[in-house]
Length: 334
Image (tube, rainbow, N blue to C red):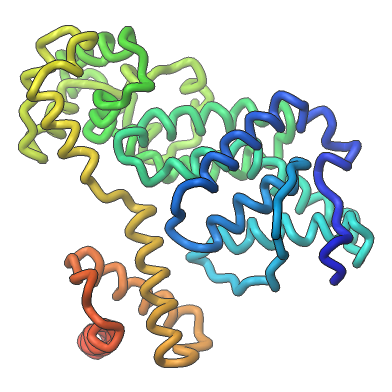
């Protein structure tokens, strides 16, 4: 491949109505800002660079990488390959069936316009409820661009709404992006009895498809009930600041201390990324671990357990390998 011969989404007439100058500017600002911070893996940085190129931005000293390996645990690889294939195909270096190219274009546009920002903010526990609710609404609005893509994304996302459960939505109390008026409404709903609202809320959280579009007009207070107070009990957090007006929370010691606690929470994406990184380190020392996808998934589960057990960060790779082997032997019958 001639790395100088590629075409971007900005050169595609079919994307003019979607990649407007305002949308492109917003994407470029976000991706450029994220590039200035350290990423959890190198392919995250590479993904941001590809996004900048796709929307017509410029990069210094950039080189395309060979296609990366795929697994069911690494959706990032599929996104990277779709962006790369599209730019080289539109650049005339190889041909794709028009149906395939159209599908790749759909993935790329949805990724850069709708999925990019939630992906890179997913590891922030304080922002999780509002980020997930906004992503849900964005997916629903995306049906005006591509009904099929929106439906596929909604079907995938509806099973991952745990941050909108009655307990976890309490994280939004600490999100400075949530308006004061919404926080006041959330506090008022803390007095709502669980029995009166539990079914109406949980039918969304557990992934029921019926009436999902009702949420497009809902705000975070909709998910709050008396049961939300359990969040503070589980984490042994002082919730006394809730009795004050939300406009004054930032000055209260109980809120400041609680914020430090919730900021230290680990979220699912962070655990998964560290598990993948552990697998890569293990593979580098042992060579090819397995060609069987099922076996690889079992090893990933073991790595996640190691991380959940707070494996010391200074543990040597040899020590990690020994722990993995030991756990795999113990779990060999499962």
